[in-house]
Amino acid sequence: MQTRGGALAMRSLADGEVMHPGVGPLVEAEQLYVRQSRLSERLLAKEGGEIDRLVLFDVGLGAGSNALAARSVSEQLAEGARLELVSFERDLGALELALAAGEPFGWRGEPASAARALLAHDVHETARTHWRLVRGDLLEALSHQTLKADIIYWDPFSPRANPTLWTVAAFAEARRAASPRCALYTYSASTATRLALLLAGWAVGVGDAIGDKAQTTSAAVAVSDLARPLDRRWLDRLSRPDVPLPSDAPPDAIARAQLAPQFG
Image (cartoon, rainbow, N blue to C red):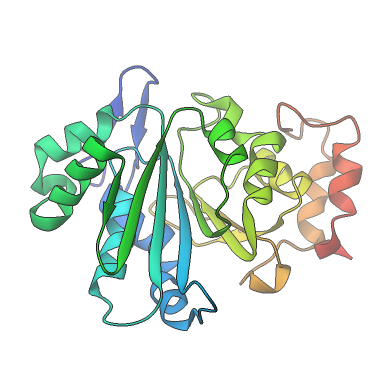
């Protein structure tokens, strides 16, 4: 299907949602995830000790747009850290369909061959990029990860279609799998999402605009890694009687959020 802006996108019949509505998957992948996470800069700046690599968790592989964009950056660099790209997905139908469509979703040539190898073997490797597929339930998969993520692209379906992945528990699992300089990026700017991140131990900030979204959300282990951290003015909305809360918010959720270190 086409978005209102004319970009080609996919609709999940099972979940009733369009993947990357508005600007479409390729533009969103580049602007919201790859550019905002400064992926190229971080690959070039990464100074290796024993392991010279940057670990990126791609949560919600979908049609593969975010992975494709990230992998493209890595493959085009002649130097810098190797990208360890870990894609998490429970339903691979969207990627299979995107590969069948080919050019409209950016899958052609070597990247398409890499994605087909990933589907067949759960791994594809080049000199610049090690791409691994983790199938099944995300929270269980995160609990077993031994790698620590330096960047997380959080791009599953919305809380309406996929409620368990927008909870305090889900973001706490991501936080446990994060390196000390990890940053997380997501398209949601909802109060409930930001509150869940705060309660899970992340510092939370305003992410870049994309399409008709005036804001998205960024989060980080260290508040100093956020370009625009939420300040105390954002806390005013938590005093509203109808403030939306994460589904697993504790009774004292608002009081806990107000005590987050970034508001000190």
